[in-house]
Image 1 (cartoon, one colour):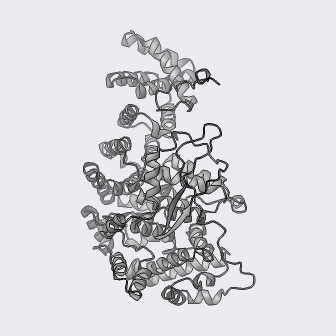
Image 2 (image 1 turned 90 degrees about the vertical axis):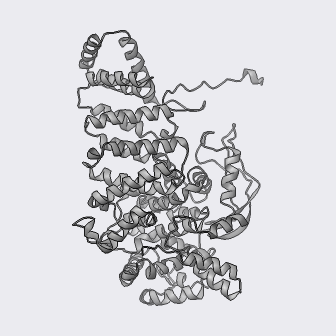
Image 3 (image 1 turned 120 degrees about the vertical axis):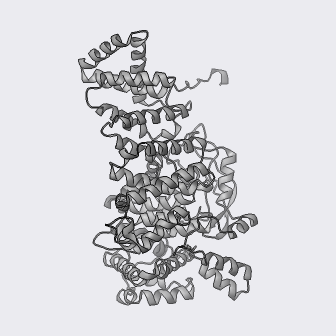
Length: 618
């Protein structure tokens, strides 16, 4: 065929989003565009009084007219011209509103909630923030829901100019309307949780970081009761920022004199015993991220999920700044997505497999430690009366199903859990021990697994870890020995496949298949294995557009980032990056003992450094 004769895709005509030729313009945007164009034509050159009379008369004819006009004016404010023109469209919208801005709120929630929001042009984002500012100033009912949705669009692990601008602009909005913000307890807590997690990524943006710290420290001091509604993940969030001076003092106050923060605050134990509301765990994933992750855990089989998980990691978790987001994604999988009985009975990939798959891409000991804490966090103060068994199921299944083929995963996780029992909060060591034992007892009683013996007695587990587990879990091991009815704890094949598919660089124009690289290395919790890349083509589970896939250079950077660390990277890691967590990389204790036994003092010294990382405030 003559290439010149091939049909060309029409350029997208969106004024709101930066679309590619293959993208479709949103149907609602098309309607709003048409409505705005009609209004702009009708109003051109009209005096103010005449324009007001015409608009009010037209909007009174029917609610359909009213809705179209409101949507058209909002679209004009986002996409058309200067600030003076924005003000004109806003004034015109106020002339026609007859429902207390209910339809305007509906339109704004739709726009802010677009799954393709990240592709909104920068000028439109700025004009959106201006419009929200105007609506909040008018105390329009329902604006708290719009801002709550906007907080979901602040991307973690993304330090692009566009995203930083949106994060900064939203922060300005919240700080400017502080009194309004303080009227909505759920919005206070959500704003705090989103920004205290985001600020971990902004060390290179000092001005923004200082404002985020000031904002969050103000909220926690002045609205502690509202922030405490977050639950136990409030403590996890505060731990990660405890070395920032403003939060160090708050952390000390919470531990020593909690009533200074609020007369109703009984201390850190009260927070730790309160399960985190799913809303807050959900708030850390953008709407697009959530949609893509749910596609994996709700629709894909064991055999088909790996390619999409690889794509998900490359898309959202590949940047250096994504370390904190790994833990938040794990918390979402554990605390927000609870599969239905229908899904549990199907061949859909289990949650623990997805979590295990994510572990492969963690690049630092600090991130690995924080992810393991995220996995076990609900064990430490588990109460069957208020906690869900679904929150502790993934961790035990990941250990249980890894015994056969991936015992180092079982050993690392078991060691970390036992370490948390003794060291998470020493004054409550026995309390935490009882809660962990209670969590495991509930697991056994409800039949998630039938016995802990296959985990504890796994021959590949370090002797010290096994001995410690036998002491800590003695009653459970004795009461639930393995029987003939106990299924083998072997992993389902390919939990951590030796043949790993790499990220594609381009889509095949013919059938949408993903291209493959030839070979690469795989790191799983510090264990390096050469992996021959599977060059076989498989059915694509999601049609990934060119926009979804990064260029070759970006893919190469991602691939090398998840591969075996270079000598330079290992040396850099020894410096213990800022923000290190109290919670050790699970293998550090074992690595230290092994290094001492084999006289590998460099390895032992590095492991010892990792083990000695503690908060100065603890």
